[in-house]
Length: 161
Image 1 (cartoon, rainbow, N blue to C red):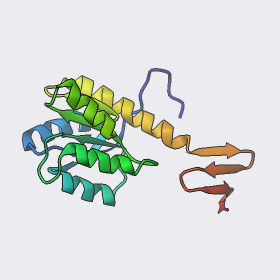
Image 2: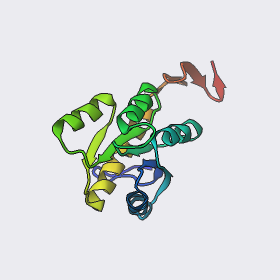
Image 3: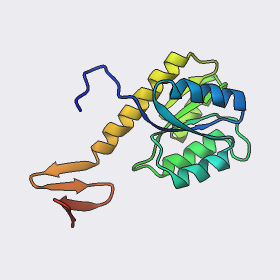
């Protein structure tokens, strides 16, 4: 399906990692309202366990989490590189040094609390779309073949070489 320039495709699976239940529910409702599926984790280790079992389009991480802080979770997700979900840090830490630290750890974007729901929805849509475009560029069609750079294979028809 062709998407008009400036129009974002909505939908996808998001993991929200937030230790305050009220904030987690607010984020979840904000995203479900516009068509996203949302899973919740309340600490860093639970987030990594969920990531091990499902393929998420985006992870929204608080920085201050029990059992493992958001920066370390971000680093571990970013280590997976190819095919990893996009990462949005959503936190009350607003100092520029905190933002730089998160971005250096592998975050794709950073949003501070309190936030406007419309801004969160737009940033989420942008990150998921960028992630899908990046994933699509991992497979390069060449004549009757396709090179899957992530899998390290060549595909022809239904056959993988």
